[in-house]
Image (cartoon, rainbow, N blue to C red; front, top):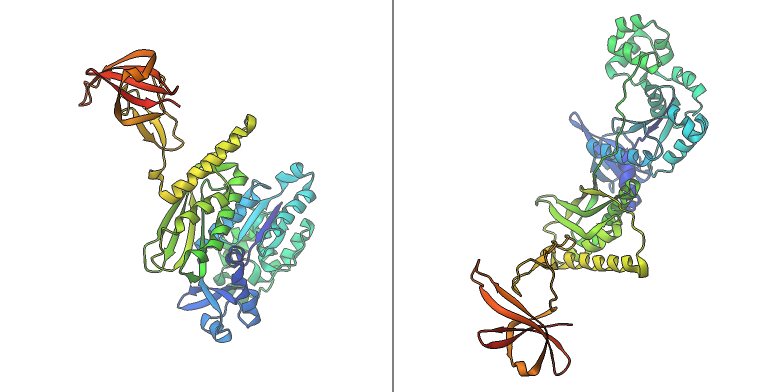
Length: 467
């Protein structure tokens, strides 16, 4: 048994969901059909002015001068349909996507999970209707029959026992047949689907072709069907066409907030995290503006990425008004579960990494780094910057060294110091131009300060201070 969900205006509903302000204006999507431009989807404001699907765009504009028009793009609607399927995937695993307007959900395998067929149907229909989209539902013993019923009417019974009778009562025009087959049926005097279903299969094939015969057999559940079940995408990619061109960053904040909210839901459902996302701003004539936003450690909260992006806005002027926004997150990682450290050490680490991320967004990733040391024994030559978050290299030996090195070292008198530890002899640097031969000591001065001294060529020098 199958539940079919038909979304008659999915692209329009998605636009309104991401940009609620657009629903205060008459809005319609148009599509080129041959040489004509035709309205395919419109909101309630446009319908009130007399605009409706299937009328020409020229007529729609004459009916409503304030009508906001956007081009219908089937591939964009297909992306939205995949997003809807991804949301429903947490309730049902066997989903089949049809065109860009429908999802069939296999119910029989869910009976045991939800405690019976009726319970499974109730849960799935409730979750589908909770989505912020217009939907028409139908139930039948195969997805083709359920699809035909759902696309025909909003008021179809969800009782599976009623499906065969409802199917028979459909007019030929609602049976999902091609325009050519419908024309042949009309010429032959067929008006309802039941009249075709009562014909022997061979007769249907002779009059209307084998393709129509096979289709009717699938519609009646007498022919086995193969299904390409939906699998959720591994990466996040969502686009948003703007109704009006936006020339400044401030106007982009609300749609960006919506997109990052979608990313957060996407990551939460999969228990995934991501360290870097990419925002693409499309312009009418200029090349797209690409802005990366990277956290110091992987995360899933959309607000954290948006905050970093806001820090970059001041330094990135828009070359031209924005007509479309894309948000992409490709390198998804598994979310690691950590226990809180004693005395809140993990919280302190999170705050530190959040600060690092903000600095990187403001100054650039190249300007923020962590200190690291190499095995080079020469002071000042064994220090180098490493990327934040990169695991430091393990050293072969670790000696006590001061945190504060003087550059250059200061000459000093040994009479001011009491030697405590040493000497540590360094004869090295023959492999490059920095050759040295020194004896290093840890010493204490008359003010109880600890310094690092060395003796070279008959002179004592202060190399640095210990904390």
